[in-house]
Length: 259
Image 1 (cartoon, rainbow, N blue to C red):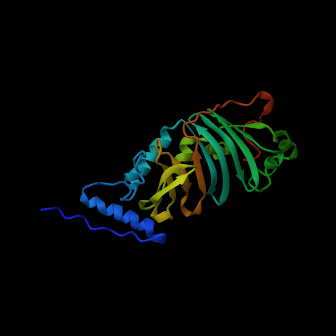
Image 2 (cartoon, one colour; image 1 turned 45 degrees about the horizontal axis):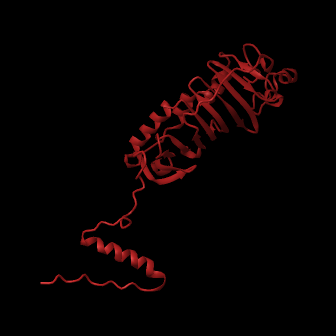
Image 3 (spheres, rainbow, N blue to C red; image 1 turned 120 degrees about the horizontal axis):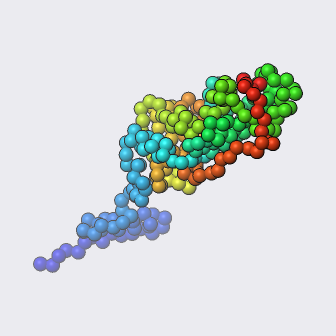
């Protein structure tokens, strides 16, 4: 007996023609031929695979990748203690450098090993290190410090306050934490890199974009409670750190006027 021919599917004309054509082609797959394009594309295809993991495991792998990286650039805003800090820092294990802006005052930080330097203009020092109040230093002291790299003694209260911005481990440990119940929240792209988004408490506990290419580095963070947005880049890209020349440096002594 002759095998019956498959039914003919008529393709309508006009704007529905393309959609109908795809449907007709996919319908032929039931004859035993698997055709590409008939099923939904896998957003994790060709990635590092973390997008297929539960959110908690993604966060754990992200923290491990960040901790093992030799260097990183952190850029964005952080709200802490009622103040907003704009950061642009490059960090690695033995120090960091970059700029911080708080309440309109911008200062540069440089830490090489245990030695921390702060560089700012005279106005910064005359207003108590950018805290918006009259500092202990007089105009003469502020003039002496302005435009120079000022050595910060380790016993000075300013050392702990400023050095945290230059410490890769401390800074990332404090930032890369989502609060509440973790969940994945779709795929996205950050600076041309495919990402998987994870959230804490549906975003109220923070949102983190994790790279799906190469190592699962964190690329963008929205902190819980609208406490800032940060981007992370230049993972593993080393940079040089050196103490400033002697003629660029001021050693103020045991305590800064900003403290």
